[in-house]
Length: 100
Image (cartoon, rainbow, N blue to C red; front, side, top):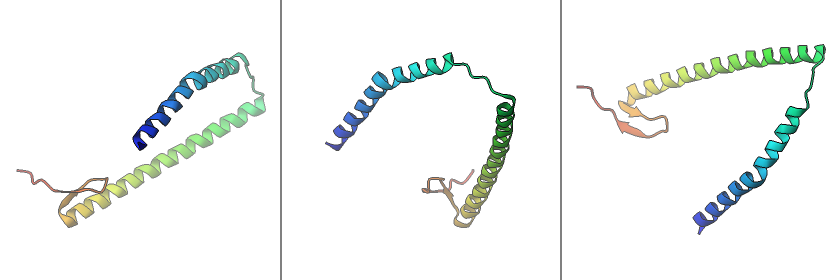
């Protein structure tokens, strides 16, 4: 019964998105495209600075993710060497297969 309700809810949501949401999104996109907006020099400079800041922050986030990934890999290898078992990232443990 719960599966039927979930399926019905999903199908209802999809129908809503397809029948109502998509035409509204198309109409809004056409409206936005038809209204050109020119920026003043001050606004353009502010946007350029904002993009530079965001690119800088994105670079920092990427470096942090890489560092976290390296730390995670190191911790995982250390744990595997101590337990002698191969460990999945999901948390499942399975016996380590020895190379012949």
